[in-house]
Image 1 (cartoon, rainbow, N blue to C red):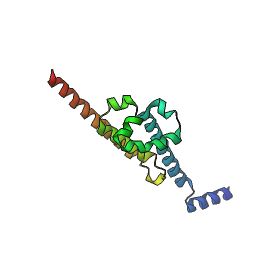
Image 2 (spheres, one colour):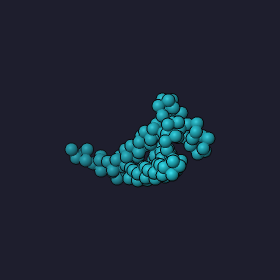
Image 3 (cartoon, rainbow, N blue to C red):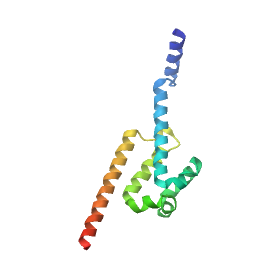
Image 4 (cartoon, rainbow, N blue to C red):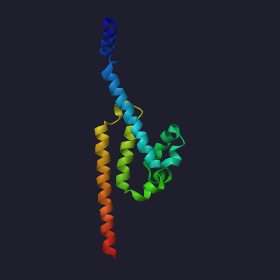
Length: 134
């Protein structure tokens, strides 16, 4: 048993121990969640083309024309531009190639909640505008 304990202590001293492993695993989980968000944005047809295709298409999110081309039409017609921009931004951060640049799950949750609040406000504004037209 002392041999195993000694090896674990060496790994932890080098940064390869359980704490380092947990941080890497968490960064991988954020990355995977980013792909779930990305697939929700682009829909099943585009997401079926694979990870490499999706990563390449992420550059399209930077422009309005690119968004029109890559984002699922249902998402485009039901989301406000501000809410969509927030979700795209956090998605980009989640799938950053550099694990240290990825947000924490707390940051992801906060941004998604904020996007939901922005969307709710936009929906209420749209309803009140529609009610005043009648």
